[in-house]
Each structure stands twice: as C-alpha cells, then as structure tokens.
Image (cartoon, one colour):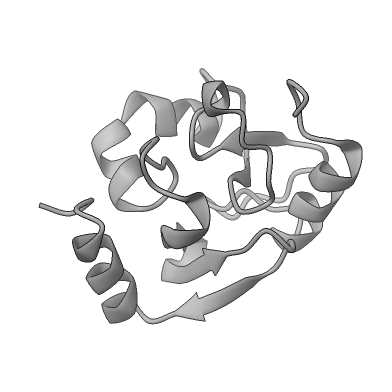
Length: 124
C-alpha cells in the first residue's frame, strides 16, 4: 500500500462528502482528506478518509486533532484497534453515517450510532 491515497480514492471521497467539510459543512474544492485512523496505520480506504476544511493544524482538520476525545466520540478519529468501516461518523447537520470501502455510506439514527459507539467502547 502506498504512502498516500490514490487520485481515484480522493475523488470518491470528495464526491461522497459532496465537496463539503463533514464537520462544518463548508464547501471546499480539493480540501484536506483526513485519515480517521491515523496515516501511520496505512489505511487509505474511502471508509477511513473524510473531507475536512483546513490542514492538520487549521480549520476543522486542525480542530479534530486538537480535540481527540470529542473527535473519537464523533467518529472523526478512529482508534487503531477498530475498523474504520465499523465506526459511525457524525456529519454536519447532526447526521450519522457508516462509511464503507466502496465509497458510499449508510445512514444511522443517533440511537444506532450511540449504541454502536458504546459496543466498541468509544463512549464511556
């Protein structure tokens, strides 16, 4: 596996996330593709990547890294021992999604997302 996602994967992530930051909803073109499970784990799948505004130190991308507890609880970060596709993701507008490796997602209710996060031990 390469050190960066492929152009096709980046395009699939951008399209899936409607060219908007998944945290704040701001429209961005070619924004920062954030690894939910940190890059050192080598997972460049669409289930592990989300579109965020800013860089690793600015905008929502920076905010996610500066606030790890909240970011894990909302699926913007994923612990190394979890599969990214198993961890629900909160998007702007309060919508919960479960991302998959095919570049799409399924919707979850807030109750389903909370139950899943509790089962995974993400929520205390």
